[in-house]
Image (tube, rainbow, N blue to C red):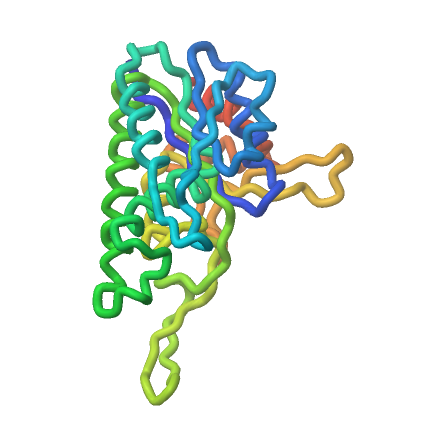
Length: 262
């Protein structure tokens, strides 16, 4: 059995990320979605995609409560999915990965310090980001293993974060508060913490940015598949020429899966 495909989708709210995931409803086999925030559940109602919400009930910084249980539940469910027989599991979706997997990992890491603010840790303020990156990397590695063993397709959606990105544009040295600081151009990145926001798109077979089709009636959205000045998108799949020939690329993951298979 061939390994499943992995997709990373980045876009602003209402740019068609969940719609793209829903196109996989047509695939045969079991389909599962890690949903966060809770509102994402609405999109999957009435479909064959089993969707469950993931959150930390005890994470209440306003009450000085920093309890984490969602990360453990997420990883336990992933372990159960890993036991699926080849061909049994069609797809695993994280919608959205930044509000779900990323925040659950962050809460788990910070729960050990009893705070939600790394600045209170003084000289140890960077360590939570190191541990966060390690746990997120483990998740990505296990998802790779899952799609290799089961043939399931993996999709992770991210809200878009526009900020300075190392390596984008020409480096500029500027003086701030008497210190020389290196600055880069801004870019559109997945909404994650630390360096992972710049690294994670390299894990996927295809990374697409989602955006509305201007003046479309009825309302439609599309994939941006080629990189530009602010978006590091693209694919290692051998379908780029076909995608370019389409002009406007519909946000239809099921169609892309079929295109790859052909």
